[in-house]
Image (cartoon, rainbow, N blue to C red; front, side, top):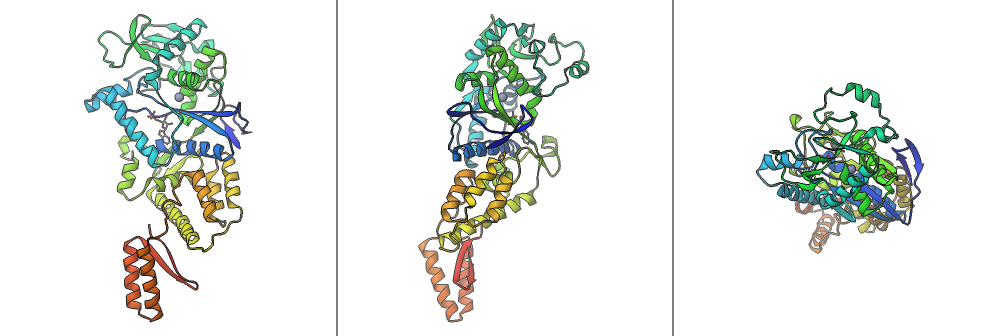
Length: 447
Ligand code: AMP
Ligand code: ZN
């Protein structure tokens, strides 16, 4: 497999560090519904895992749920997102985390994404967070303010490297007089203190006062606890490069002196009708919104996989419709195989696998599928690789429909076209199409 590694900005041959490929994905902040843009990322990282497995690797994958500490801004200001969700809905932060975490998993399963080996809730790692802060402090990387414990980014000489950051520009552009007494504009909280009178339901005693972990810390801690750094592959959104992942790398170095990951993959953003996904534009679509318009999670997944993770993607309902039609065309090829027609192979599966091994190029893989002959057993392997339910959603038709087809063939033989059309309409109501070919009737699916 070859991957575009954000760390080196190079297209590299994947070489695992050990016997098991260790993968970590930055997961959702469970305070609201995830929109279709969010789920695109998980579709691409699922393809990463499936491709590695198809290549014969053992994979251990960890995904976190951020249920505390993620503030509204990427800096260290503003409300905690969970507190915000709780205030909005008049529920407790714990209820909010449970509700939106469950909703995320419901959609995750509907997209046929393989469950990670570990789903790590940030709140289960707070003791480990405290040990991490102790370690970073012992190694001289932190300082304390009224506001919390901050990471001194000037102490990590490679801080700017990962994000190719211009720190002097960042410093010059920063607002003067930080209320939280940060030493450098890029410094960030690894632990936040809760001030007297401040509302924050999730709180832990540490350093003699109530507080909670900074958002970036959980990923370093969870990786340390569940996988052990360095890991093989770390994935996330492109927006994570300059702050979140930069900070994860800094923390891990400060704790253990080790690198965090060998390969870093970042997926780009999805726009809708050429616009950013945003509340004010009313285009924050969920998978349920798509279902209301008659599109299944598999249609959306098909749309996602038609493009590459690193490119910007523009979503329109027309393009979703086209993706659905392409998937139906594939299913109807499977229907043909089920009828013993075109059930032959020309090595397309191997070429498909080779395409996704080229930096997860599913778009190229799909072109291979369009232009090759696949047998039913190929289609089963294709399904294992992409999780598109192509075979499962194209079962053989029931006996009663075969009976109708037989009746229709007899009617046609007697040139009773009224009856033959009636039967066609009956089959159509059941979602079954029928084509008359030189070899007789061929059934398929209409939806
Ligand atoms: P959140 O769950 O709110 O922490 O957001 C999760 C992540 O979803 C963000 O950090 C981004 O990496 C990703 N994301 C947000 N908007 C989009 C989008 N329009 N397209 C693709 N990914 C997105
Ligand atoms: Zn993270």
